Length: 505
Image (cartoon, rainbow, N blue to C red; front, side, top):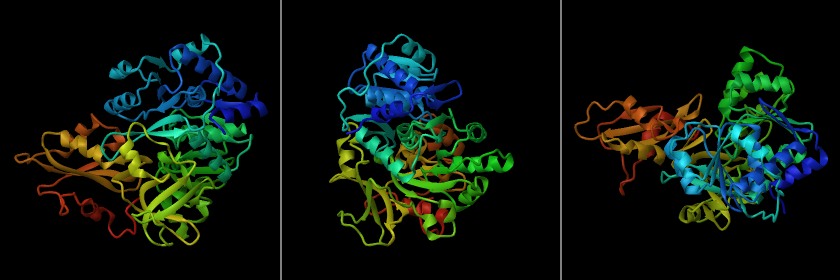
């Protein structure tokens, strides 16, 4: 049985003075990391936080973020990473829904958020003061691998986001799956450049800690800063989303750095264009490119495509790769029967990485968790060698720049505008983001001069920028509908996707 403290416990045993974390302000050894985590738990308990209490984080990446990610669950509490790109109503909902007791944040414009928790701890000032005045707490007392370790909020088909409950067992399984896929050692130096509020962004943290490796923390992604850190610290592993890799490749081609130490460039969150693979491989010829597929509900790692740079002219380059050792991938019909190779069905996952469920949402949990298996909502097929190919989504979801956007989240905001009668949002191909959010709106009678740019500005008030439509078409006839009255989004999407063999990008 393992909990989140076990990777750190091993690192302290094998390499106490090894550098664990580096950010713009400091270097921290593994012995110091253990000490600081125990002080943080002691400080949170002094503020009244106890077993099972939720501790939210709203901040850019930092060594304090990584400490909190480990320490909060190690103290039998639940970490709640909040998306820094979310609008105020979305953040308020997550705090209310989770019932978070304490908020750790580097934001100063909190508005109503500060009234939704018992305590706000500013980063880094209040945080460091808390540690300075705390006494050490014992980490990993009464371990329970099935206890909730983290609540990760993701979008929802009903508009409201859902808190994905990941247990210690889930997150430990993910770390072990990653180590089985990408063997690591204490000599590794990993770059944390993706936002840590994503389960994918924090994907490699525990694996690196378990091996006693060093992690360099980039506060917010910038391709110039990322390349400077790779050169300065001789980084050999980095994980991001395709848009990050594309930006880094452009920067490296324009202003080359010494990046020959890079051995692994892993990416996930959305499919990657073949041209981006070529340009990234050209910019970083020493790197093996690895594509990962998964979901927050899967902790998140599920499949990997190894040596992607060597497959650009191979049909497998359009796949998500094969399952990692700790989970099983099936393609099923609507009754749950496995389909033969080559037949399209819903992608279904089983394994120790499958979430516990959605926080306080039993019906939505039951809709996706059936007999211990997670129904992803992705449509695809397996080939004879076990490679998974995605062709569409059964869920009404868009993946833009590695971020999930549920159409209903966008549509609910558009329907709040007094001039809108009907609205439909969907994804269209985009060279930079993979998919871009696009909307079609039917105005109410008498609203002949409805301005798309005004609707876009209206959306910005209520939802995160990446969810706001990049473009809105005004249509003066009803949206196409099925017999029961459901909007036929396939008809609206079809002109944008042309004769592509799949409707995900």
